[in-house]
Structure formats: C-alpha cells, structure tokens
Image: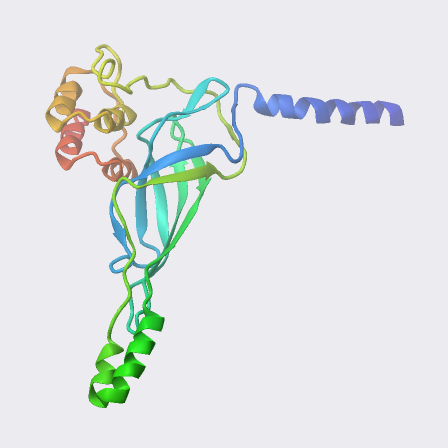
Length: 249
C-alpha cells in the first residue's frame, strides 16, 4: 500500500509541471527587455509617485516565439524626486519600471531602477562663503543661495529592464506581424490596438495610420485603460478618435 501511494506521489510530482506548461509559454526570470524613455523627466518638476512611460525597443523572443512586441508600452514610476537646493546641494532622481504586456495582453512584471544625482557644489560654497565673510561679512549669506544642478533625463534615453520572476503565459493568441514599413500596410488582416502602436513605432504619420484603419477590417479594444495604453505609447488623439469612430460602426 505504501509503495502504491509513493508511486502515485512521484507520478504526480513528475506530471504536474508538464501539465502546467502544456500549451503555455515560458518567459524566464531575468530576460532582458531594452526600453526607450517616452518623455523627458527632471528632478526639478517630477514628484514621487508620478508615472513614467517607456516603450519596448525590440521584440522579446522566448523559445522561438515573440512574447513582447516592439513598441509595447511599459509602465514606470518616480520613486524619489528632489529638486536642487541651496548650499550647492544637487537634485536627486530615482525611477523604476514595473510592468508591460505580452502580445496577447497578459501582464509581465519588470524590474529596473535608475538612480541619478546632480553636481553638488557644497564644498565650494562653504569655502567661498568663509572667504567672503572675512572681507565682506554682509555679502556672505548671499553665497549660501547658490544651488547645485537638477537631474534631467532626456526623452529616448535607453534603459535595460529585466523580467521579474519566471512567467508561464497561457497558450499563444494570434500574433501581430506589423513591424516594418515593408509589411505594415498589408491588407486583409484584422487590425488591432497593437497594430496601431506598431505602425506608430515604425515612424508612420497619422494620415497613413488613419487611412489604414479606414481601409482594413478591425477589432479595437477601446475601454478607458486601453485608450490610456495607446496614449502612453505615443498614439495621437487624432488617430484615437478615428479608432473610436471605426469601432462604433
């Protein structure tokens, strides 16, 4: 009896991982995901908790299959922002990435933190103030007003993020092949939100994207959160309005 139970347990332990992965795709922990910053951020204007928007720079492939599409929006957040201060103290800026989506809209956790500090002049200010105090005592307090520099991270800055924990994603949904100007305007294919983002990321103008929307069968997701994702990916309001009009017909 004990041998039978042991055999059942061993069989279960062996087959469970196989069943769990049947039809699923595995995205390993630590997979590199290169990103591009979609906006300029500054320690002088940013606030703790402010959102930061990125986009995926290239297709992320696992086991020969595209898991995260180029141009997919990525969410981030300001962890700490402190503007430059008196006494020559520089600004501070820390931000991180949190999440993106797979080609079929399944959430994928990411990790990456960037910490930056500006140039401080604290020592220089102290020395200057002390020297001036000897000769011109009244002027000394004004030197204490000198400030360091704010941190400015320009738009299009590259950031390397990494998949946070192993992900087992559900069976593959139909994938989207719009990635280049050579194949992006193919006809007969149902257009989706991801196609619009990919066309924008490939450098097409609004007029061409709108023409493509009007001439193609489409299946857009236009709930509020989806519109936010599209806006974060850089899709213009003109294109969003066309998508809404197309979806209402």
